[in-house]
Length: 208
Image (tube, rainbow, N blue to C red):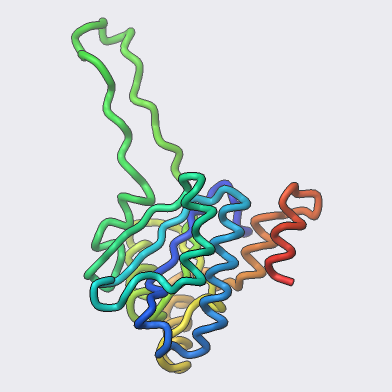
């Protein structure tokens, strides 16, 4: 089973200014999160940027915030502030799968057989997920998404925790629960699928 860019949404969790200095291999995880955001912009993958208690942990770290600007400029970035460790408990599911819009107009103005059904918002089945801390907010978000029957792919080299042991324990538990573990380069080449893709050179330049 391969990732399909047209069926994916990207969720980036808690890369915040007061949290990142305490993370194991923080610079690498942050750089890969930025690559994911830029790839998502190039390949038109809708994305959500999550922050945990930003009044206490600060805003998203500047390198990632800048990387997300291309997504924001084309309306592909949503923002979620949370207090629960799982972003799902604070509304992530609704951002990923918004409810269908109700039928417009007076329902009695036309006979029932002439009324048009409300247009369905296209649903994207797969969530590509990365963030901090891997064993807390990322883990709980991923497991709740699984409970909601969402297909979850965690980008391991864009995740971190205060200790390597906690990060790796999270990956073990996620894999056991059925989450697909991938890397940034796996995501890149599976989203592209072919060297003939119009964005191949731009994406390849991000991971060289």
